[in-house]
Length: 219
Image (cartoon, rainbow, N blue to C red; front, top):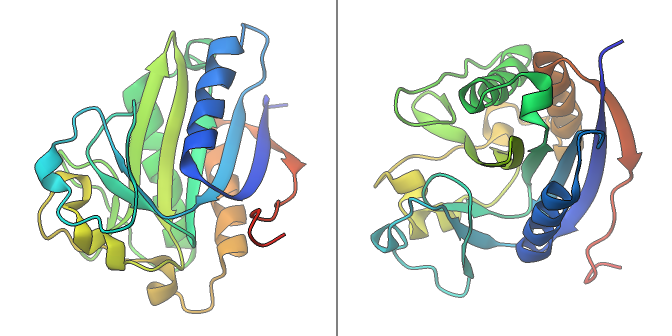
């Protein structure tokens, strides 16, 4: 049997508490801690990576900008976007960072292919693209051989805030979302497909733990 990957479905959450929880989990884990995959939709937020430059944040308006410790430049998270955080012991699994990025990208490409859409990579620009427009972004942090941060996959979200930044540091980069390619898709179906693809590519068996929790404003 493949090792289990504990799937934590967090629902909609603000960014900062989830980031802090990821760091705490990573710092507290030991050699026996099971790997986890956290799935979340964030409240609207721009996140700036370690390589981020201020000039790529054009006009954020009322949306907060958070400086994070992941790799990469600025991106946007909001409702209708699946954010997947793989909290993995890479040393235990014998995975390098480049290999993890490749397999996360391939997981999105697999989901797209199953839906009849041709996803592709770009040299020097991590993520997944469809017809030249970016549909998924990746930014990771590895501390003592353990990963956090991860992958964002645009499903059925408002893309307007991407025009307030240079996404991933590229001026004028076109963004797209899955619902414009596959109108019948739901966020829930896309989430399930993504988890299946990630587990397949990384060699895990999914062990779902939490059901979706309401955002405090919706409770």
